[in-house]
Image (cartoon, one colour):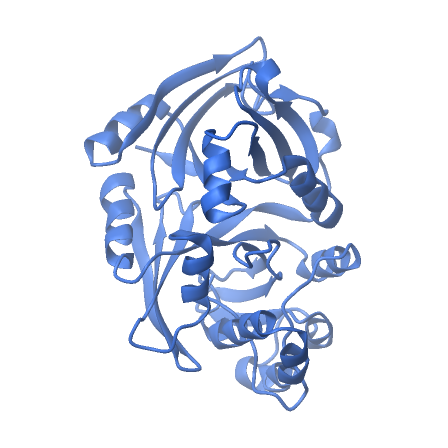
Length: 373
């Protein structure tokens, strides 16, 4: 079994065109394909977006009983499908079903003159599923005879974002160990990191699982119910169960990316200036100018392998569930453990409201920040 990476994400959303407008206008994604009843996708409309090597499908249900309609009604807009790229979709399907995954879609062939794609689907966590994707021929063709490509591959160059670095997943209390074991036993992932996180009276457990290719990484988080309820509890309540809390996009130039996206209207979580006052003492000199990091609110951490720069957006949705992360790696392989306190405090300010957020972000406030991964 060889899981090569994340082929694409599929979001179930109430209005695919509206979500596409936001992602394209704010983050520079471009629409490159579409599908619907006219292409054999009954009861739905889908748009295919791309930025760098990141592909996102936005699907809205057209009828009340479509899976996308039901998902949005229960969870709000969110990641419903995490697709794994593999060199043998049918073989992986047989293996993971034999190991305990629930079979959802048997291997199906999609092909035209430009390419051939084999897909199959199995269970993941909560209401999120995994699509197994095997590609032959032109990699530009997304799903031959099902998604109509509407843009030229040559126009997708010089992007600020490269790939999906990782996904952070919230699960209900008591489920993190079983979820980690599921990905180890069924998909052959390894648990590469675990940590108990304590922030302002809140407590949560975190485990990181990763595919053997190291191209698929999930950060799993569950709340500690013996501590004060916090944002993980809020997510699980507002999302109605387990789900993707945030998606991390890797960039090679986080300073330019943050400036560009902020100018387009993206809201980023704020970081108090005291965080940067202590930064040089904590880490010494770093590759990027601290003045620019301070101005933009970009967090910094190091591990044995190098440096890590990260920043988190405000939530994109009325439920304040899913949000995004930008991450630039200078050799670092971990996920910013030293920034967890700053990250979660920043998220608390966002959830508290404008007045409380302004007060908490004042220069004499405590060091700020959000979550692992």
